[in-house]
Image (cartoon, rainbow, N blue to C red):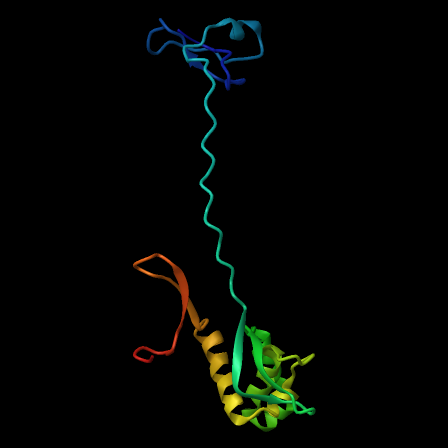
Length: 184
């Protein structure tokens, strides 16, 4: 015969088999009554151990958004100071769209890279601010360097890769030289 049981986890509506009852016996639905609680449960009453805590996933690697650089010649300010070390951030879609509305870019499309670089260079030496006016006064070799650096960082990902020595397992970074298959 099937009867309700007052076992842990059995709530209203639970049906359990009672030992000695034949197969196909009709059971009773458990309620809040004393009769349901007085029937012995065929299941062990030991507590179920809690599930193991989920394995902690390795910390997600943060997206690197700023990249240091060093200009080949350096920007020379009005006081004659040379500024070579700087930081460029990843460009957003907005960074690439806003310069297209600039009158200087509409008149001369080659000016696009100057305006764009003025937006994504966040630091250059000890200058308080970097803008397109500073970029347009850089040496041509520095402008070419920054254009190439921009392409490496934004179009092809970052310029460094984290690797591990196969012999000693020491982690280190390598500079990626080429951007296309076969280049180094």
